[in-house]
Image (cartoon, rainbow, N blue to C red; front, side, top):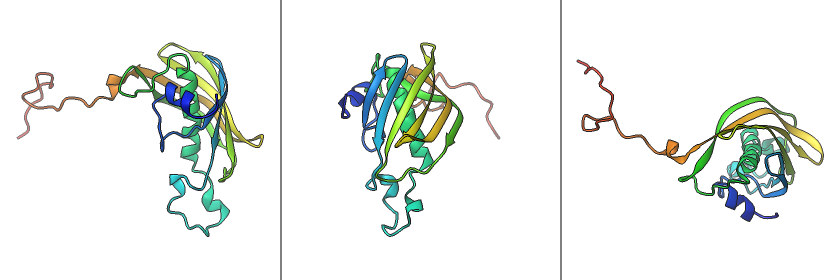
Length: 174
């Protein structure tokens, strides 16, 4: 399961937005373990002074969380892949509780994302898990909820104009 091919077959994320390098274990509908190598060549470090101290190179918590969340999406979509964000069902973040960053992650680290499905409700899935570096926890997720919705929810809505019969009637302003 090494490489990005199984990932690209399951979800629509692509470089530079793809933040998972490989899936190393998967029990569909139950759990997944994925890896992400953090490198100084990532876009989030582009404007950093190369001479900056180590603390300036801590992996941004938002990217850490996004990387773990992409692993959860992989588990949710493993048996019903959708590599096209414009078709089928897309995974949308519906909720997040109990997320805690526990330690800085620096370039050269390999994140190990452990994702466990708590409940699958068909169009909604609930996950828990953590991320580690060299066996030490760096992120804990109490609960992440994904909503699987038809891709047409991402389509832009029709503009509200007098020519559009779907425009709700609203009083004119003076």
